[in-house]
Image 1 (cartoon, helix red, strand yellow):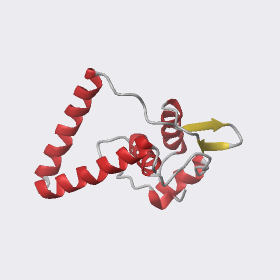
Image 2 (cartoon, one colour):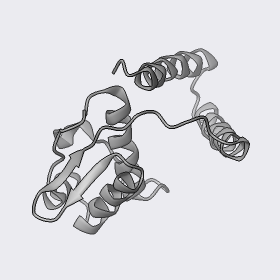
Image 3 (tube, helix red, strand yellow):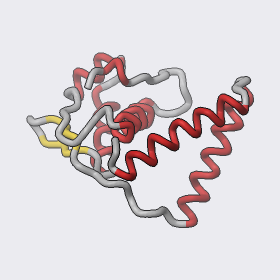
Length: 136
């Protein structure tokens, strides 16, 4: 994986480690990163993204806790096989709905049209559907 695939906004309210984890998660779900792939060493990715190495380490730990990565001292981070999780709970769906509503409101406030939003949602939903079926 090349660091240029990860884009973060250091002026964002979202912590950098959360942005990094989210970007890597998107690469995993889209199939850009696959089981067995090595991620860049923590220090190298930190230099590339202009963040502290602990920020990258935290992002890697989050992804390891979610079952995406195997972290081994001296061997780095590797993607592990992971299937789609089972259906989420009602509480999980409500939480997602709240986050999505806030994100859509922010997009609308920034002038992004409903057509663009619908297109992007469809595109990304298709990617996730393919991943869940194992097609990515």
